Image (cartoon, rainbow, N blue to C red; front, top):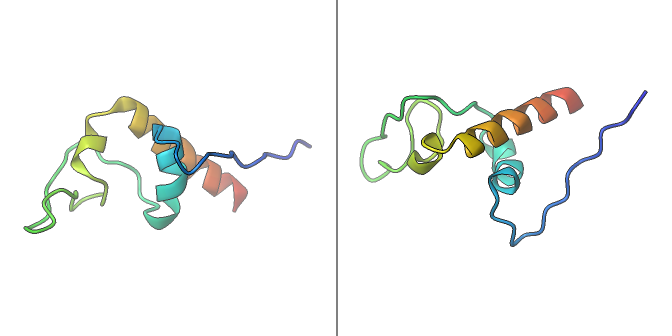
Length: 76
């Protein structure tokens, strides 16, 4: 049986994978496809999934969040 190792990222790493690793435990919801802004002053965040607007347009970020959700589910 192979044991999965947890990824290691520097605090200064701003790659989508590192950001997903740091953020997904605080927001364990998948990134939706249709951004719906919250009411002001929180319009930068999606009411449906809780992720911010720029993340919705980036496929690499979407994949990183999905991979991190899967990694967390597998380790639970």
